[in-house]
Image (cartoon, rainbow, N blue to C red):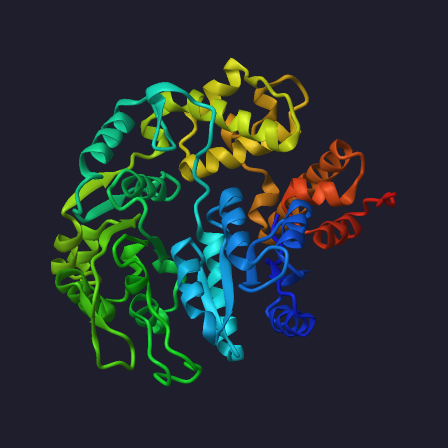
Length: 463
């Protein structure tokens, strides 16, 4: 159910909130506002938030404390820090605590929008991996779930490699848990109290990737109104995780190789050579050996990254882990959605085992959430599963399928029926409270009202 990204602006200055809101609304964002961290947490309780832009200095609860609270709820939620010139050190501290980026006041409009766009791309690209309580024993280690022999081998490699500063390359399809392994390698190392800086290389425009990695000096380009450290600098003494490393442009790979080998670089527009000591972990869902053969990835960089290789198996290769993962997700979504689903019926679990899971654990998590939300019985039945999972269909194609316009019309009508059914069930579960139903569906209240109007669903006024 697509929607516009929802951005929460947190600043105690009303004029600053108005300026930021006007800029972000031009980017087709829906904007929420809060005057301090306490109010921001209340707003998050009632709305789906995709990106946060917060000032550091605020009454009641400042930006750093808010960042810590947000990390406790959702460590992957992009958090952009606003800071005055005199508090840049605090902004760097925020980056080490997990902030997505920081912007110095007064800022250039283009700089703000570039960072906001990058955060919105990251919010959409970030994987939703399994974590949290619910599965005991050796089937859950390092916040990763799996009793299969493949996952036990992964656990063994994590424990063997974590204590050394060795460079690690993580490979596997999207949704297999590469970032969880990177976090585990950091958490189990001697660097666990040092910075852990993650960069999603796929979310950075080609023209900005050098300044993202190595930072820039004031005046290096239009909009560079102050100097800014890059990700290598921020990760000094800790771990730098470069996700989607296969997306690095070829012309940038030479500079990256030098930074890795020599532990030194220059900021964009700078003359001073900076030295850092970082533990590097990279990840990709691409076949880098094929990229090397095709000439899109440097062979020397590939060998430098591939010191220790950990492959994350796709879910279809470890079907014995499905019951563990399903039990974990059912427990999580029962708590989140206020449901009491006991699990999957054997026939439904058999369908899950037959399915090929192109989206891996991420796809499974989304499926379980939907099933927990809409299951009519105490256990999830085959009829509660999506059609492509339970294997319904087949046979000769309908004659209308030969007509592209007729097929397009049928698809649109089917999508509207599904969306109407989802919204109708969510409203019933929430006693027709639109605000609660919107939160359940993970869309904004305004988006839900628009969809209800378009689908002809009546809104019962909340009291």
